[in-house]
Length: 268
Image (cartoon, rainbow, N blue to C red):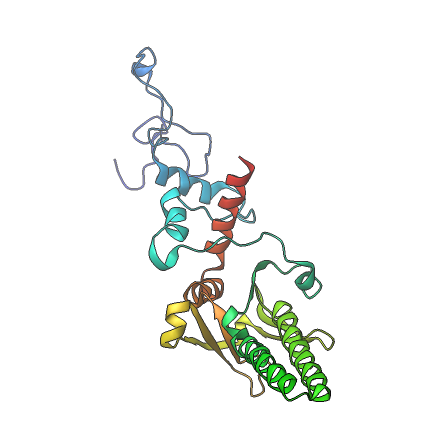
């Protein structure tokens, strides 16, 4: 065929579809009667292929929540050793709830270790022993007026110890998905906080006694100059608390997945 001669539309290539024909599909009549032949997608059982098709054809604006396997969720809280978190209350106490805003997610609250009361309790015990010895000595000397003064002093010391115990009870370290807080005080309330996004460094220190009794001191460093919350002493289970804070800072989705699994288990 000469280059200038027009092509025969019934010749080679006449049955080839146009590029813009979306309804074109190959059909061989020889396979119409074959029961083993199917026009189903041969890759329908391939998870990767199905996921690729879903990404291509689904609505791109539709958000899908991240999914975790059972093994991944088990590793979050049952890996053994330091990953075994102690259970916490699901809801904050009334003492703490008033300081949380509605969109904030509560993670836990901790009272300081009982070692925080060792000083006041020691002073109270010493004052009681001293009063008993002094009262017996003054009674033998028949000085009743000084016995009364000694008793009044002892009552003052015991009142101060009771004040310290109540102050310890209302002192809380609080962790949420947004910040860490320390709330203390009985009459004059003090609320100190630090956003997790501003924490540049964090460490905890344990003495030999602290390792034996499981308490420590937390030191938080922030990008700002003035820090309302920097050093928190006598916090219980410092290793567990350290992991909770770090996980909240770097793996918030893992925390949500673990808490969501716990909720499903409780409902079951």
